[in-house]
Length: 464
Length: 131
Image (cartoon, rainbow over all chains, first blue to last red; front, side):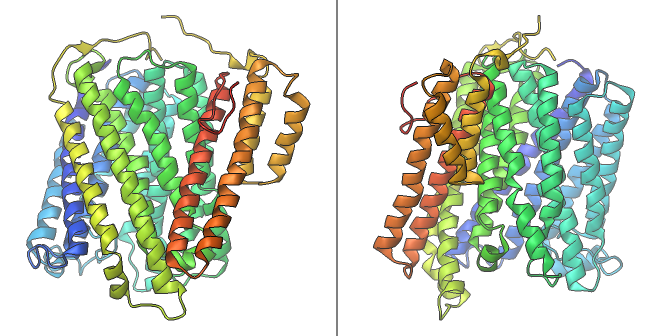
């Protein structure tokens, strides 16, 4: 670790992992509620548990991104962070907001929460992924602005690298596009139209820039490949993300009341949305092929390569599977969408944050460059347990989704929704088992941080 | 430490290796048939006369493309011929089989392309001949 202010990343990473564990626990609860409908009812209804599951997903990833940026930017800018105190203050503000929002979800009804938080004065609640009370959204926006200011000033006063600038572009995009979460017109079509400017342009555009920058940084450090080479690949990936992701928003506009031309634009640009993931995979493997295996942190290398591959599978392949309008006509809102969401979020974002934590945490904990061999073996086990089980989750719900489409939307006399769900129970049970294995993998990941042994020192890699 | 400057582009057969891997991927993803015809032409023209790296990637991608055709077209044809179009489980098997098989073939192509860009040879597991 080159700069002491990089240490502010540590609480962000710890909180991110804690919330990740919470997300998986709630995922298991809703997975069980699929097959045992009254499990924990009425204490924890399905809709509330699902809301907590997706809320935790977003906030732990945001914490991970912020921690990663605080670790990377000083090193890339070649100077201390502009204000470490601001970073710590924003961490606590964000965490308190997250906890209070969770308590609100869990302790009172959603309608009561809306009433208590004054949603009637500025109604923004009640939309998937944007369920947070308006006041929570405002706090998130303030944190995002403060964070971008801190990161931006560090870069402004220091060295400007391609990694820093791509990361900053993604982070500014994240903050700016969140503004559309505050626009919730009475017209439902308009409301849905602009909601995707936050949701889609986050997940399928600016977050990808952040992910690419994080991956590029880690790959540069663990392989020691020349920065110029990394920069060229990052330019290509950035261009591919922006060219495909922005108009790719169209695949959300097929059936919400928008003009018909979106079925063409959405299909065309969604069909090419796998390109950045394709390039990212070639990039990651090329870098490791060119100059592999000198860095002692083998676990981080595994996470980095895994990120590229699973992002390609989840976001690229499973996304394309339902992106074309004539196919989406049947698959829209089925378990096939859920399969894509699970593998894409895990591959593209959860894994890149875990990559960053895997790379940075040993140094943040005072070790030279990597954890001990024993710790890394455990971490690799956690990688395989989580990756394989999440792949099985995606395949199982793709299977359930295919059957759902057939019985519910394809046959001449479609079955009702719940009749179809009863036929899919066996797949939901298998999904639950896979989810448990995922949890075991996550527990192993956490345990790996507490395994001692002689830590691995710095090598010739990582000189950029 | 001195920065190691990698110049895989200087290895003989580098361009041919990348071209072969790109055509293999284009055959799977964008222009099926046409990309294979170009690969076929390259194979017969350069297989015995090109440097080691190019010849290796050419042989691998040519063999893998033929296997891809068999695995994706023939096997799927058999699945529908046996199961029929009106059975839901035929669709489940066909969708899962095609997705997994096609994705695996594309991933192998990505690894092959990454190796080619790095100036290294690559062996497609199970479906590639020895270089």
